[in-house]
Image (cartoon, one colour):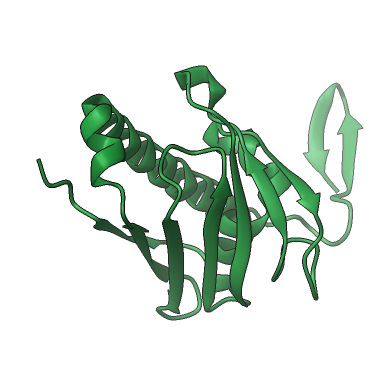
Length: 175
């Protein structure tokens, strides 16, 4: 059986590109909103999450091994890429995410995942491909939801000065 070697995910979220970028690339916080804990084992440059960063992503709750990835593309707010280097049955996996600002408060991203040279691995474990695709879709939905959550926080206005209140005759009123 021939398995698809590439799949895409396109999403549009109501946040500035900087927020979408942060949701995708803050490796250590990613587990808070995706259910896939992630830790950095080697810092990247020029930022900790940047080029050359080695991260380990856990997916143990599904019985799969941790996956080690290295960040091999890093163009802030435009392009992020990684390559799987260890831990996965799929050893030739490249992920690239491109970010497109669509105005001040909207961003589109396109995630391009390639699985290379994996037919023999996937044929030996036919459920693996379905599991991978299902997990990928859930992961993308989690990222979209986190973007929308952060976008909603952008709409919350906090007064720069305390609001003066007074109590007169047992009634609370604005002063």
